Length: 275
Length: 338
Image (cartoon, rainbow over all chains, first blue to last red; front, side):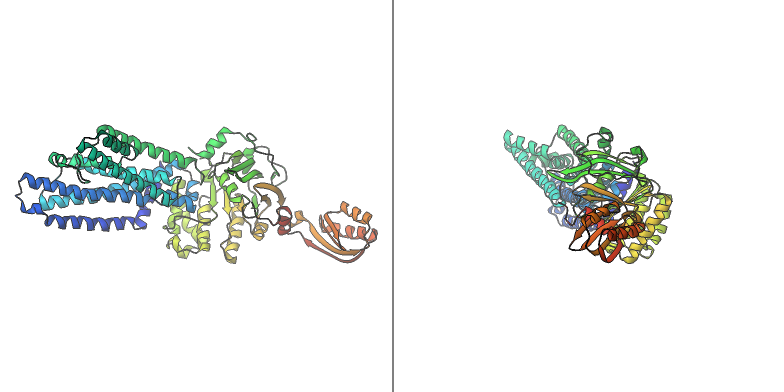
C-alpha cells in the first residue's frame, strides 16, 4: 500500500510541476467568470424571480455551464494522463521505479488515484464554482447537486481509466486518439438514443444503448443532467444540455463494473508486459 | 501479478531449457557455486524472443557474490534485454534465472538491487534530491535513506546542482544522478547498463572509484558496457555475448590473458613450428611473420630457444600483453549483432 500512496502523491506532484493544475485552475476561473458574466446579462434576469419560467431558464443555463464542466473534465482526464504510462514506458523512465519494492499494478493504481484526486478537485472547484455563480446571480440551486457532480467525476474516471489502459499497450498518441474517439462515439450514441426516445424508434434507442455499453461516459453525463435538471426541462426535448431519456440504474451499475474491469485489465496488462 | 515471479514459480532451474548453452560463465575461482541460491546471478538457457526474432538465444551465467562481472558484446547482441530479464523488467521466453537466490523481480530482493538504466531517463520534472527521496520512499526507508541522499549527491559531484530540475541536466549529469539513485539502498547487487558512456574522464574515474568502494563493501557488480577500457580497469571476469549467446567467459587480469608475440623469422621448419605448440597457442605463420600467444613471460626464453633449435633465424621477437580488445575481436569479431 505504501507504494500506491507514493505513486499517487508523485502523480499529483507531477501534474503540479508540469503546470497542469495551474493551467486547469486559470482556465476554470476564466470559465466560471465568463459564465457569471453571461448570467448577469441573461434574459431570465428580466423575468419575475418567482416565476416558473425563470426557474426553468436558470435550470437550462446551469446545465449549459455544467456541460462545459463535464466536457473539460473529460478532456482533462484524457490529456493529463495520456503521457503517463505510455510515455514513461517509451522513454524507459519507468524502469528504475518498476524495480523498486512495489508490485507493477501498484504503479497503475497509484497513478489512477493521483489523477482521480486531480479530477475530483477539478469537478468540485469548477462544478461547484459554476453552481455558486448561478446561486449568486439567480438564487437558484439545482436538485441532487452532489449526485450530479459525482456522476460528472465518474465520467472523467471512466475516460481516465481507458486512457491508462490504452497506455499499457499503445503509444501516447494512439492512446489519446482511442480515448477521445471512444468519447466521441459515446457522445454520438447519446444523441442517437435521445432521438430514438423522442421519435419512438427502438432501433435508434438500441444503437444508443450499444454505444453506451462500448463507452458509458455520455450515459453518465445524461444521468447527471437527469438528476439536476427540472422534470419540465427534460420533457421539452433533447440537446446536449438536457435529456429526455435518462440512463437506468442498470446502466449506472454497468458503468461501475466497466470502470472496475478496465482498471483491473490495465493493472493486469501492465503487470505482464515487458518494460 | 509480477511476471518474473510467475515465470520463476513455473520453472525450477534447468527446466524448460531452450537450446544448449554456448558457454557457461563460472564463478570467480573457476569453480561454479554448487547451487543457484549461492550465486549473485545464475542463469541457464535464458532466452527472449520477439516474434520471430531472438533477442537473447541462450544466456547461461554464473556470477559469484562479491564479483565485478563485465558483460561485453557488439550493438544488438542482446545485452540490455539480458539485463532487463535479470531485473524482472522483461519476461523471458524460456530458461531459468536466479538473482541473489530468488527469481528475478521477486519482492524479496527488490530492495537489495540497484540499477542504472541505459539511457538515464528519470522523472525529469524532479530535482535529483527529490528523485532520491522518491526512491527512498519507495524503498520504505524515507527517513534514513533520505539523509543519505545529500551525501550521495556530494559524492557523485552534484551537490551544487541538487536543486535544479533533471530536465536541465546534461547527459553526464543525468548519469551521475542515476548512479546516486542506483546506490541509494546500499544494494547487494548493482546492475549498471553503460554507466560511463556519457561521462568525461573525471566522471569515468569517479565511476571506477565508486565501483571500487562498492566492491570493498561486498556488493556484486554487473557491468554492461562496450567500453573495453572501463571493463578492463574494473572487472574480475567478463562474458562475451554475440547474437544473444554467451560465446566465452574470461578472467580480465593481464596475467590470465597471456602475451601476444609477433616475431619475424626465416627458415622455421614444420617440425620447429609443431614444437611451438607445447608452449604457445593461436599460432599463425604467414610470409615469415610468426604470431602466437604465450602463457606468460616465463615461457618466452624457452620458446625462443625452441625456435632457434628448430632452425629458425629470428630477426625480431616482440611480446605484448593480450588486450581485452584482442579477446573481444577474437571471440565476438567485428560484426554488428543481427
